Image 1 (tube, rainbow, N blue to C red):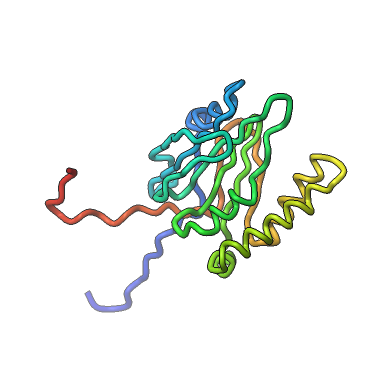
Image 2 (image 1 turned 180 degrees about the vertical axis):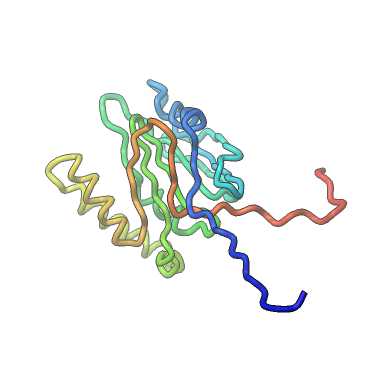
Length: 197
């Protein structure tokens, strides 16, 4: 048919959601008493923004190697005996900045989840040498920890991360978890006839 063609715009989803029961799977990993090992993994979302797959991997007392092919990665920060769980560290932030496939990082602590999301302006920072970026992050973290109270130190650290171009939110571990500014990505389909080995 001749005439003007109307362009159909497909709305691009700009957030993903971890529903309440699925979130309990993740938060329970951080709430196990006397368990001092970090756990982590990846969260994979379908095109509608619903959680499609959770991967769980055991780490060590201070780190966990995370999968590279998920939109959102998470890891726990268990509370050391008698102390509160630490916030996202400079190493956590650096890992997020230098992984091009990863759009967000969740740091799951007893009682709260910290959501760190890359902003569009973060590209230039992620291209700089990792040693220089880490030095700047570590300096900002050290400055923030000189605050007179732990709550103020937390606030100052996350204000510093916002200056680096990250979106930072803290969310209580109840109800569904909405992760803003994350676009679900599906891998390209395998060629026809290809089979799993």
